[in-house]
Image (cartoon, rainbow, N blue to C red; front, side, top):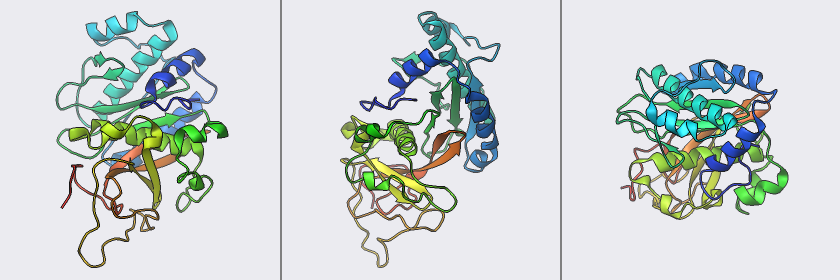
Length: 293
């Protein structure tokens, strides 16, 4: 299911194990085609997209560190690992950056200075997004091609978030599903952990430690406890709108700094990616810090 039950971290560990056991599914070709169609949209947001299929020929380690890591893995997990590394290199090439091997620290990829990508795996597909060096926009993505069961809601959402399920997700975007909200939180988790200073991540132990609120056709997601942003003293500031002009319905004074995340349908599943940083009012902001004036 792409990592439903695991909420004691970013979720990649359990998701990877399940995907490795399941291998490629029948949904993979359609999902790859749907993701490929998102390439221009992501490019307009400054993101390079990389895709790889665990079944494609020619997947191989790009250096000794990758070869050593892959050698210790069972065959299906090895193919997924190599597909993820190749997807990351393709995403970086899409923003004009070459990248050699990508070693790891624990289960986390380690990139050379000036290079970074966010990776996700589901149903035998590896996807990655990257930004050109020098920017400070958030970087995060997540792919979920297996719907989460309804009883997983308590592992993903707090009681204050459950009313989101089934509500409108913005013009033409359908409604928020549990799988979509899970994917969005996974994306925000990655973006916050990659942020300079890792603002607010000390309080993040499970996905329930993140709070999601609608913000136009996207979601504003931030730590429930962490760096706070107070209400501006300028007249008229406090109500806000997202990029589509629709209101950020739940934003309030004192809410944590967060990430704006967009969730898009991909075949039977969803793909989410980070749009930008957002303060308590949902407005775009610079790189997150513990305090904003």
